[in-house]
Image (cartoon, rainbow, N blue to C red; front, top):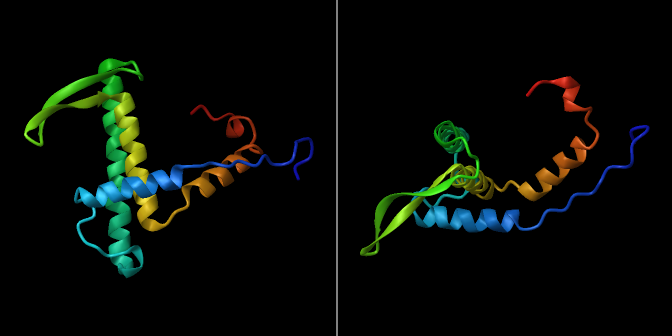
Length: 142
C-alpha cells in the first residue's frame, strides 16, 4: 500500500471482450482474416507479421482521425461520405473523427480477440495502477 493514499480501487469492465469477439467474427466474415488458422497454429514468424500488420492498421486509423481533425477541427463532427453500392442499393459511408475513433477501437479489439488478450482485465489492471501514479507522470507536457 502506498502511504497517504487509499487502497487500490477495483475496476470492473463488462462487455469489451464480448464486443471484441463480435468484431472479430465480423472481421473474419469480411475477409480480414482470410485463413482459418487459430493463433496457436501460426509460427512465431507469422505471429510477428500479424502483430505488425494488424497494429499498423490501428495506427492507420489514428492517422485518418488526425486528418479529420486537421480538416474539420471539431472532434464530434460526423458527416456522410461517398455513396457505396450495397446489395443492389446504395449506402452513404459515415465519416468524421468519431467514426475514425470507432475504427481504432474496432481494429484493436479485433486484434485482442484473435490473440486472446483479455482487454477488460488489462484495462482494469492498468486503471488500478494509474490511481497510484504521480500527477502527470513527473509533469510531462503531453
